[in-house]
Length: 529
Image 1 (cartoon, rainbow, N blue to C red):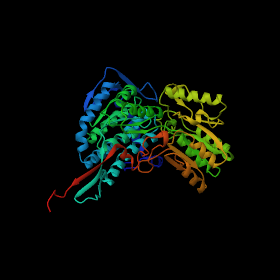
Image 2 (cartoon, rainbow, N blue to C red):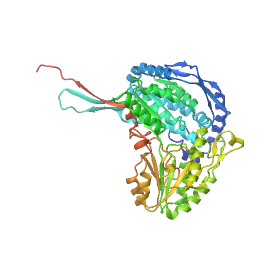
Image 3 (spheres, one colour):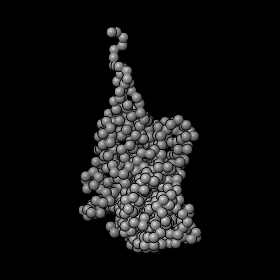
Image 4 (cartoon, helix red, strand yellow):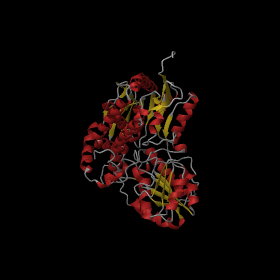
């Protein structure tokens, strides 16, 4: 379990040794719950007049912690501290920064099971999902270090046409970055954005979502333990609105890294363009409406498994989740029947239990989204193939628990085919030709992940040539559109799903946090023969 890259969904399904360690960590992590926590700005503990409580989606009766409601003043203080620390941190040799990030990865790996147990309590993840997320975060940090080394810290000698000149290209950091992370991958996605900024010499003001602040707090402490100096990383907790308003208007914010909804990401970019029209980078990974195509040649059993895992893993609360399927009409009913049976077999409940595959939704807003979508589908002629229920009574009366849901027979242009819901609802439509299926799949503003199941190599080639998404898969039983891993599948969206065209966990991601400077030094003595 300790080797880089070994903690994956595949390894967890074949290695039974981790269960005891994880279950012990569930008990140990409870000792951290219910405490009052500060923010950290310039290495100082900072409080606020107002506070908020973080509670578990498993059971809101479990108080995870009490956190300050940071406001605009705290955002500005964090930015000032990050800018003050920038000169020292950016001037350190890039090899020293690599050493710090590698030490952070080691500290994270040492707390593998405790962090996973926290993710189960705070985000509602099963043990498999939680352990895979922490493993992904560890490997992401180490992967970025390797990329930075392979590129010599992004310092490249150049050739000058003039005698006596030494020229080089140097990628330089921008300054103080704001990092805003989501609830669904509060360790892996936050760690990736923070590392992208810190490793390249920038400093960070980190704001975790208020739904998972304890994971954010632990991540901040891991970077400090790894050797990031005071002010180079700062932690501000609280609501996103006041924080966002403060940072987009602040002239000393050099860049923003954000993972979340299309609406918020679009707002950030629009506000920055209005307030500061000169270039300020926004590294945004946004939502999507991810399609999977099932052709007549597909292995139906493999397609059902891949779609079920991608649509209903973490209760559909992934930006990469399969949320729409286009299946050839000749195999549609066979596919739907098998998918219904697979969805009905999923064990729903407390994600702390080993046999549970499907935990709670994050909050009551997600329940309302789920209920309204099901009601709308039935009203508009949709056929409920599986699920559709909000579960009640016992444990189900505390958290928000629903059944994985499959809906067929809606018109292809229906809202449930086009809008991201972030709940476990899968819409299924049919097609007659692969050309039609690709047109339906591409007919969206989004472009994050997509998949196909086909035994015909020509169909797979046609799909890869014409699909307009950033991360694409063929015949992936482990997840039709999910499960990207650092160094294997760079995870970045096209169109409205991403802002840079450079994927997380890929060889070009770090370039989003630096800008090029051409340096020329004249070495030939002036004058004389």
